[in-house]
Amino acid sequence: MRRRSRAAEAVAAGLLLVLSAACGSRLPERDFEQGGNSTGASREPVRVGVITSATSPVGGAAFTGPRDGAQAWFRDLDAHGGIGGRPVEVHTCDDGGSGVGNNECVRKLVDEQKVVALVATTSLEYAGASHVSHARVPDIGGQPVGAAYDTYPHLYGIYGSLAPRDGTPGWGGKLYGGTEVYRFFKREKGARTAAVVSYNQSASAAYGSLVTRGLQTEGYKVITEQVDFALPNFRALAADLKDQHVDLVFDAIDSHGNAQLCKAMDEVGAHVVAKVTNVQNWTSTVAADYKDAPHCRNALWATGSSRNYEDVNHPAVRAFREATKGLKTHSQWQLEGWAAARWFTDAAKSCVARGDGITRACVDGFMNSGKPYTAGGLLLPVSFERLPQPPKTRRTCLSVARWRDGTGWVTQAGDMTTNCFVVPQLSYLP
Image (cartoon, rainbow, N blue to C red):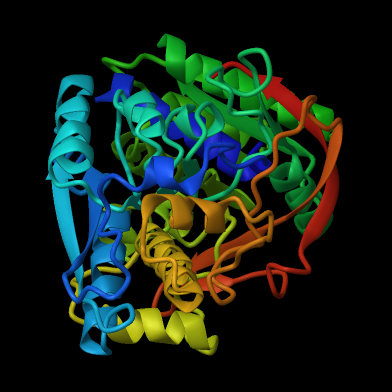
């Protein structure tokens, strides 16, 4: 089960398709040995795969952040000797944002290239997930765009899971997430009235309904706003937000729609405490994306489960920024891709230290150790358990940042490891 903020992000990411989508294996290790560079003493490259919807109906830049971060980690790793003296050979595959393309990428990387693991998977339609699981290939640190990381064993999403992962999503087809984002704004900003903006389209409306439930659970007065997907009248919507004296705005619309909504809010003078977005929009391109909405732009807040990529005082973030200084832009998804690659590397290094060889089975064993993982402090502690029933409440921590012109994303509310709440868990259908 993901944290509520990430559960929401997963549903929101799935929305993009229509807007443009603790037990380890009980088998002995020898059953995993096929493929994956099993000879520990070999100096041949360690092969890993990265599947990304680099071209897709939602645009080329929408899903490439995790891939770019992972590649940056492996380049830096090889410059410092690789893993036990072995370089990492990264095989990338663009699935085009389609299920057919995703299955082709999985077959290419898993069956033909025989990669040890997949890293930082970011696919609009992860149709090949069952094949990856059946082949017992650990998929490490993938973005939960759909429900695959709460469905199959051997798949380890970047935010962890408490679900049984027995082939059915979540518990009986339902996923769960908490209300910590809404609790945060109520505690820190005194917010009491929130608007939820969605399109008149099924996936958008469904996600908007989920956000509405969470806000109502936390005691907010909720204003629901729906606009036409084909011909949205954002100016009329913004005027209503002003009239309703809204404190917060959440949305179930695409990035372009968000920019247009912000522009309309500035035009009518609808000033809010926070326009809340998610980790996918936590990027350095905000100034350009929201160039026509300076007031709304500076009211943008982002929430997530990883340390702000701007926090260069933290050594792990500083290492990420130093290795990616050649990139034109930076984003939170890049940092999470970097963390995913570090996660695989730590798993592989543990195999070398034990003398087991870097195999799929050994890496999978590390992932199933039951120990929370933080990638050196980049992530809130990530764990994988298989609870028979979802918990009714959960203590969940939150990373929060606010955009400021001239500065970028500024961390709010202190360190993410102490910004925590015990919140109810709400069910939703993936």
